[in-house]
Image (cartoon, rainbow, N blue to C red; front, side, top):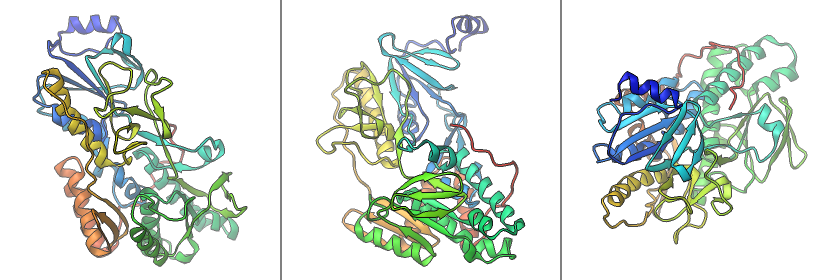
Length: 441
């Protein structure tokens, strides 16, 4: 390790302190599914791995909606990077926000100083895409990270408390109505969780008004929900939502929202002080990666079949922010966990082969299927040529998610929580520990 004198010198030069090494340095920006899969694949390999992230934890994004609806506590789906890499002798973590990449000097600039690399991997994921609708961006809530999930929880609980206080019927309706924009997996799962909250929790916590007062709308611009799944799975999910009394509105777009009234393209107006935006994402990454030929749909960075960014020496991109342009895809793979994990594992093998001057094979994505849950004992699945729904699909969804969560403790916490909920329909403590205030991006 560097001694104290070395660190003082680093600080004077505004460099991030790292142990000296003669090994090739692989810098990974972003600790999502792709970044952690790469870290795991490079542990014990003849390289120095530096993981950089603006947070000190990995978040399991597929279950953010359960935190938002009080189904899980935040620490059940968060796992510290330093605990993750404990025992990885060649892996280092630094908490910093990368602001710029300077490929010519093989340097990255962060808010804590600069850092040199031999190989750079950017896996910074995506953020909410409001398609230029600033009013909706300011007034709605996204569902892309733990802070946004907690924002939804606090706003929902505070609005329900306020609804119990007010005598104004219109105000009460606005406070208890929810509009979810976007019928993909996040929107469908959020709608299902809210509907179960309305059906099983609301009557117990708020006996002063009927659960029928809480209306849930799911708005989707296309002609079906879950467009990444088969028509059969989509139709079954729609049936499940309707059975839970979610009003699903298809072929409709939201064009305005002032915090109380949702305006749609067909001139429909919905009264709601809770709008959750899951209608689109766009890639996010530091400055310096883009050229005229590197950006494609959804602001994603185009990479070749070896996951290398065109025109950049030894710079790679992974996960949701990367679009693999190859024979099997024109616009990139689905922005879900499986492609990201497979890309991370592949790049670990590829980098070792590249460094040791061995032949490298192009990346090939294996579609292992798609899953989505609409509530307890209700899920849909497409696995290969088979599509099925109901209890079996829900069990499969539960097992896949439990096994994908980082950390044995977290798996146990989530598993116990789900078992208790299975028999009681109970959720976590519904505590309001701070006044709602939308977390800045």
